[in-house]
Image (cartoon, rainbow, N blue to C red; front, side, top):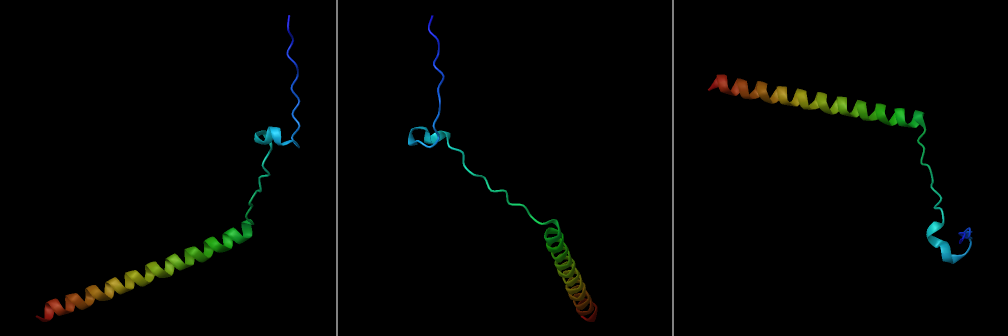
Length: 70
């Protein structure tokens, strides 16, 4: 009977370059910084939506006034 030889991998050699581990860097976000950015975005979206609603309402009022005038 034949026995299998145990394979030892030397990671420092170039022969087993495919077995080398890549160092993974975890990009963690500070929760306070994330909340700050989300609140700024929420405020910006609120102001943009408010402006669009007011502008559209003014345009409709002007068009209605012109329609009744003529």
